[in-house]
Image (cartoon, rainbow, N blue to C red; front, top):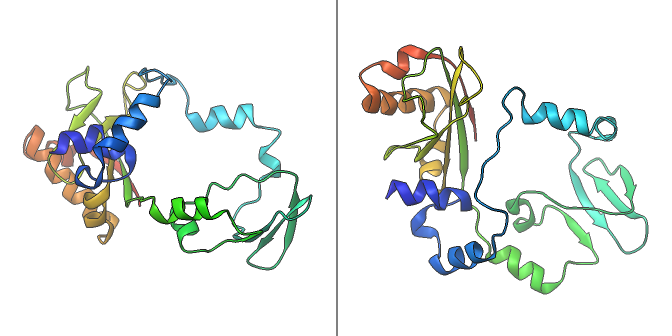
Length: 217
């Protein structure tokens, strides 16, 4: 059960028993970007964005919650939670689905009924990522992913091909497993995941090698 959760359902932000096989098949049939994964060997993806978008970054406004989008005329008016207005020629809305479902943003004119129906009917489950940093590699050298039947169905070996001193596993979990973890503190989540890895690789193996960890819910 944890294998389809890891390989398929995780990619759709849910659990396998909440996922329609027909929808998955239709999505797979339209995929045209290949199956290869590409990694940056000596830098982070963030550093690449900072380099390529250096002229855009100074214009980014953070920590401003947009509550109203008025695209009746040009320019488009964006109004934040403090009633401050900004103006734009084009607007791309990429907020989480839950924000749209809760009607946290008022659109004028209202969105088309077909789009509102889609927003109501689309599901998005809970999602958690856990990054674990170790001072040694206790998994085999050619490992790309680690699959478990525990709380996290898949760990990516994020340090593969990158580092010889810091070894990183990124645990990704969505759907029911994420909902179960979401009510726990970061400390408890990390302790439980280490216990599961210790069960796989030997008593105390993962726990003793941990140097840092972060939970993103």
